[in-house]
Image (cartoon, rainbow, N blue to C red):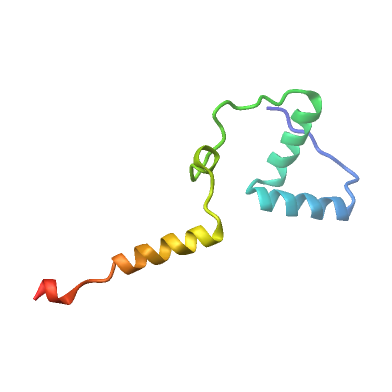
Length: 86
């Protein structure tokens, strides 16, 4: 791999690069490499790179009222009936 130095970076630009890199969990070097690849058309979109933590896109979402109603029902059902355990 070739090493390239960039001179003349204003302090405001350098600080903004650090902030953006930190938010994305990347190093400033990797962030700049990504910018360069995208601007030159070398960015390859990864297939199946999206990661979902839920199935909202398939089944929708509960409203806040629906969630409260369902959660209250589940909470009531979780109570232990002491008479059954004696």
